[in-house]
Image 1 (cartoon, each protein chain N blue to C red):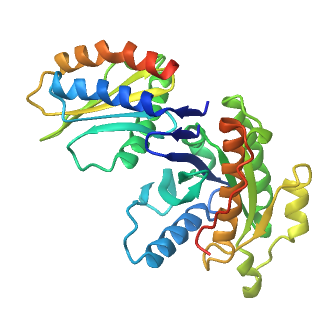
Image 2 (image 1 turned 135 degrees about the horizontal axis):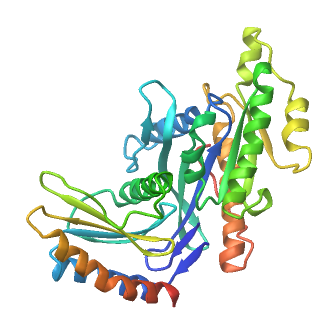
Amino acid sequence: MSFVLKEEQVENLEKILNKIIDDGGATYALLTDTGGNLLCKVGENSIDGTSLAVLSAANYAATKEIASLIGEKEFSLLFHRGQTENIHFTRVAPDILLIVLFKPYLSLGLLRLKVNSVKKEIKDILKA
Amino acid sequence: MAIINLREGIIQVKIVYYGPGRSGKTTNLIYTYNKLKERIKNKLSSKLITINTKGERTLFFDFFPIGLGKIKGLDLKLQLYTTPGQIIYNSTRKLVLKGVDGIVFVADSLSSRREANIESFKNLQENLSYYNLSLSDVAMVFQWNKRDLAEEGIPILDIEVLEKDLNSELNLPSFPASALHGDNVFKTLNIAAKITVKSVIRKLLGSNGDEKMAIGG
């Protein structure tokens, strides 16, 4: 499933990711496909987005395999808590993952609400 | 799963080095990475990521991206991966194949590894079929690695044997190589990249992608 991302699509995706940062309080957001190809990223952070996309896709895939080993379809929550940064992984479309970095003082529940509210928008843009 | 991002002007393709355990897949990647680093005087922005076991074997994958020249006005970015070759790691090998656009099958020239090559090749076909792909859906080249061992008097398979075992039906480009010494490492990658990009462009943009491209030298 290869695809071409048009300029307008990338701009719209970036707008949505910026909403997660501006309204949701996240520090960095990135979209990747499940094969590890970076689609777009936003945020002030100087993180290597290419590597983050690849490792996140691998992490997601490995976790999904663990789920199937124990008889689950997939885990609904996948996130890691760090000292100064947390990371949250969500599948927003069949082959697309949204990775969000946020500070530990931010509520995970609120972030999840924000992420859920933009899922459909992302899906619609990618479908176009 | 190749992606063309028209905003960034990037075409991104995924090439996976596949083959039996210890055939030299990681060595290919390390050689390529080090040479590129040397040539552009340590200004290579990409990192080589390896997720290894405590020993020297690949547990999950090795990965690094390379930015190359332009093709059809777009910056070409290759994502190079290796898979773990050992039989027990089939689930991770399958995961690394997700979204693959091109494959370099690295066969071991050691006489004692003939069966392992054939088994790994069959395993590749099985794992591709998991994603509803067949060998004809992905661009592919063969590399007959470890040819240098002949000079040390170690018995190795004739190229004709390797061709007959693995490439007789497909008749794809193949390269005798020594990943350890770098012989034909760039040549393999160059041709693999060329045919992969060509097939991706044909699929996505509907043209044949006949542009000049050279990696390393």
